[in-house]
Image 1 (cartoon, rainbow, N blue to C red):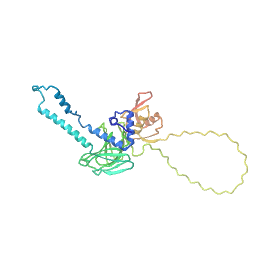
Image 2 (image 1 turned 45 degrees about the vertical axis):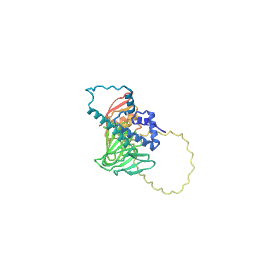
Image 3 (image 1 turned 120 degrees about the vertical axis):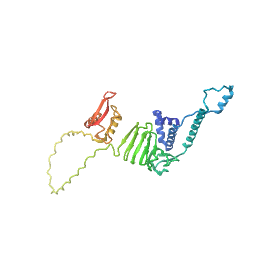
Image 4 (image 1 turned 180 degrees about the horizontal axis):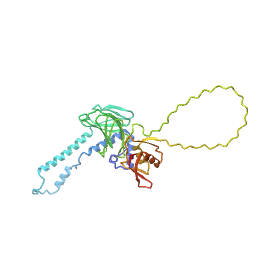
Length: 361
């Protein structure tokens, strides 16, 4: 499948229709070359925003227009532009042309590495260790060194072990986020470019939203975060949806039976058959599992049509609650009310509720 660049640009600018976005996602999943082309287009798009637009001058057309009209010489006007201003304008236009020329030269000054069906490990010029997971790639400049700001662009899933240097920060660019570090071990996962994630093994990492630079999340050792719908969601290092495990009770050893002498059994009359009685069905109590309070609230906000919450309705990341997500909304809210103060209001639809604020009792 071949897609034109103007559709890819609409996807980058978030102006593509739902059908076009699905086409782009399917096109990127087809091959590594497609993802690399998309990454290069993304890099050129963001770099080109630093250039000023200018109108090219058609010299031949201007000359023909000049000689086709009668030349009339006028007396100089006192308020005409002074020579100094004309010189400044000419200098500014020259600088713009030189900047555009240098950008075109530097656009090809890029090194690309990729992995297809297996892990690929190598070191960057600053000795930072990089591991590319299958169907992943990385781009960086030939001038990459500890003397300048170290910037790389990634697609797929990539693990870094960064050589520390406080004067030269290490930046990992993807479509929606920028990951900034000084020296640490971490993994960036952009298999789905619209839902990137970062996992930190050592050190400290800053994750920044590209469109809203003030939206920053600081991660430390063992922290993981997923960026989706303009928000950072924490991911616990241990499984969130954890089933309760019943205690194991050791079985008692049965005493050995003594051998009995054989007894000749007397024939007994056949017992009368009784009609089978229905077995009593005892309803099982729902099994409870442990979740973080914030994850349960996010789950209810997305899955239940009659529940919504404000941005202020949050608790600490280590607040845990035990419940069953298969319960009804009323049952889940009743469990919350035992441990938390809930400030609820009527929603927009009939029977809908909105959580404005939550606090611990």
